[in-house]
Length: 254
Image 1 (cartoon, one colour):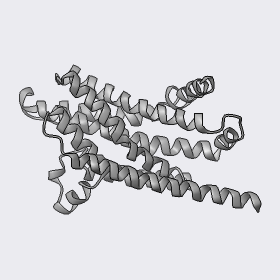
Image 2 (spheres, helix red, strand yellow):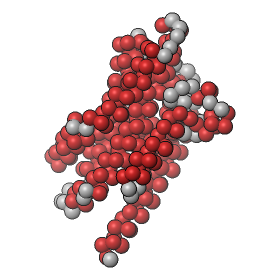
Image 3 (spheres, rainbow, N blue to C red):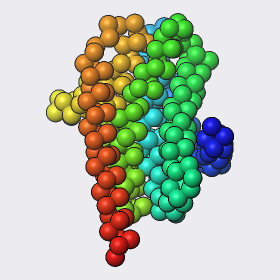
Image 4 (cartoon, one colour):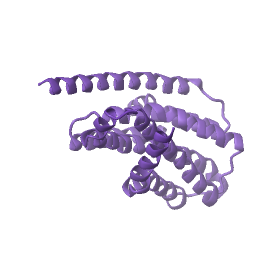
């Protein structure tokens, strides 16, 4: 437990407190988008806009999780692997388990921070009001829904070159955000794009959040979609991890 606490404090400082760019893109940029689209680029009375204030809060929470995973966790894991930190920890008495658990913990915390930030803006600036059980459900869905998105980020971390990783992160993050309806309603897109967007993990998470915050009937298809993505991305990460291990052994023997 002491080792894990030490690792937790170490990772918290280097990944969160001393990493302003990560905080900016994962939290502050989605928060800026929320303010822009709910306070500047809007028309209509406050009463008319209330449902939009809530639904766009949900969208920016999911967008924050997406950026955190595909830009944050992917770059963090690759950097630690390339700089030899993971190898160093694997040779220690405690192994890499505390490290991976600590990184996962801070990624989960970042998702909760995004709920807190977007929720505070929605309540404090736009007068959004949700019951306690809705906030609790929202936190739960975000924690569960981020898992397949996080696994995509872990999978991307196995890309060999930083430039390729950055390109892949951009090519996945922003198109996924657009087609799944995070930036604007999905029904504004062409039908063929809607059919693609409705298969994205971000779409399933966003739909669940919308249903919970509007007290609409929860469609279990969205939950099944999250589970399906979790299984597929989990298997992909296992395959990539095994491949990287075999490659490392082969290089060592050479």
